[in-house]
Amino acid sequence: MDLGLSGRRVLVTDASKGIGRAIARTFRDEGAVVAICARGAQDLEAAASDLAERGEVHHRTCDMAIEGEPSALVEWAADAMGGLDVLVSNVSAMAGPDWEACANVDLVRTDELIRAALERMEDDVDANIVCIGSRAANTAAPRIAAYAAVKAATVSMVKSLSREVARRGIRANVVSPGDVIFPGGTWDRVREEDGKLWHAIVRDNPFRRLGTPEEIAATVAFVASPRSSFTTGANVMVDGGATTGLQI
Image (cartoon, rainbow, N blue to C red; front, top):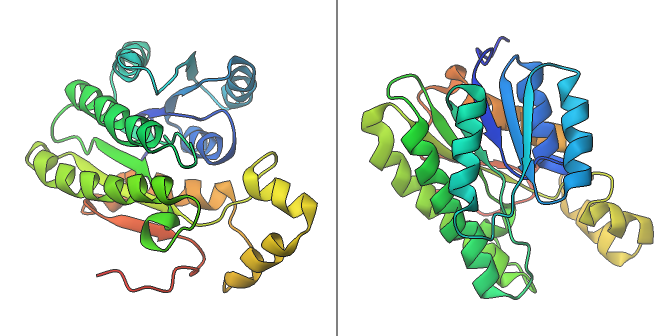
């Protein structure tokens, strides 16, 4: 299926590895022009070099915890690409029990990023925003309550945003991954230890496996594409059926 993403101008944050990198690669493979950012320059350079083999890509280091940097990132990306059609906000402080850090990055600075993007998006061209959420927002999450809480707040924030921008023809959605494994990621390290936690998390999924970044990226690309033009205000779970609660 042609998703109709060729020529679309897409900004993906935290795209140097894992889910973010897979999202950027998927958009590039669909013919989009892509801008990416991350905090670490070395990993970002490697990701940009990989993506550049597929077409036009722009990259810049950015610390999403610092006030003003999200806005500056959007201005840079829109100028580099000649506009902005899609923002994929793949942002999280991953700060454990630090409520202040989680709220600052996942909510306050994310809102700054979104507001800056909306200023550079045109009306009635199916411009849209996709925020990366988490399965943790929909279930009990011991030891990561701050992370789970701000991801739940992200869903609420985007739901309200979707109504706010609908009159402009702009869409806003959340894609919420379940447990995803990739080299160097949290679950990859747990797998290497081969302990009880690894076996428990695999057993907890109906497919008896974890997801891949590419599986998340495929859903993000579809949600952001014209093929999904009537989808807004949604929280799309991509967790292999691990979440047992009913979304209503």
